[in-house]
Length: 429
Image (spheres, helix red, strand yellow):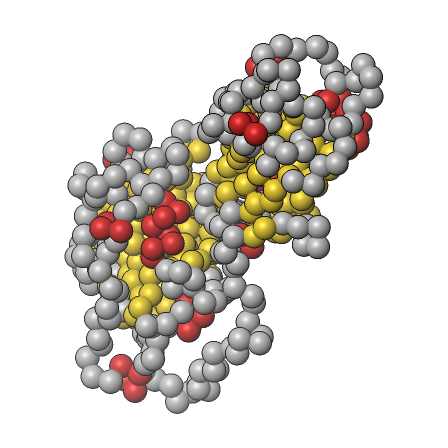
């Protein structure tokens, strides 16, 4: 089965081989493949979590680098994984490629193949190695959108409902391995050495040894003008002039999307009370279900079950801020999510609070904006609207200050403004 970017498929077996293929030709940047074991929080499990050519085996043996080969002009690096034997706490195995001496737009015919592991594994070139026949192909993903990236996440195996699935990702980092390491919580001392040659050299001049007489010469690599734009992995600050951004273009197609609210409480007090802001969200799923996630009424939500949105607590002083996490592994379930903030106590309005909002995709660069423009006696502000546009989720800056009418709660005021249509009743923290 051929997957498109962002698609996933259940794995019929927990013993798989993951092959990274690309055209072997002179001038291609040196590349190879690595695997990284992640915990439930999306960060590396610790020492030995990264498997690559120089560290070819995870300490428990569940993941190993299976070697490199050249097959009919195609360079292949392979990893073998026994997902059932992963250590406790391992929830995902991320497969990524790294390059030296050039960007991945210069690597032609790049793809990842997922195969059932052969009955008997061998070394490189043996029955189970890249040079051998391998097992039945489960899925493949053609990575045709690479650009200036020098580290490229190909896909991942991840737990879901008691089983395992594979997801095609296709997201890169122009800043290379250091940026990827920072995204997954790896230390600089844990990074692998340079990739070196992409695969063992074939005997003799390999390109000339292939029968090419009946085929036209390979087409030149596409120019930058005709190539798809690379994924933008630099921080985006939303403004009135540029109020929206695609999550996919920020790398946010899977994993956790953390939404953080911070404010400077020491500069604003009213009636002697410490400023207390509450981060909240209205959600609507594709099945039509709607609701609210907030500290009021202890409606903290859930990350792994609907609404796939979790508020991690109630910060009443603004020291660490408030955080909400959205599960992008269920991105197809979201129709729209409105993040908003209310003043619970300690201030008459948002003026002078210097509140900032940051949306940080687990696999991409952050999106942020400030709330420094309030001139009304507003106690509730719509922050950002996450809305579905076709297959993609788009973040829209709202920064819309609302003034509740007498007897109308801030939550109901937001509901009326955006047409959510919920039934409200009083709640307490």
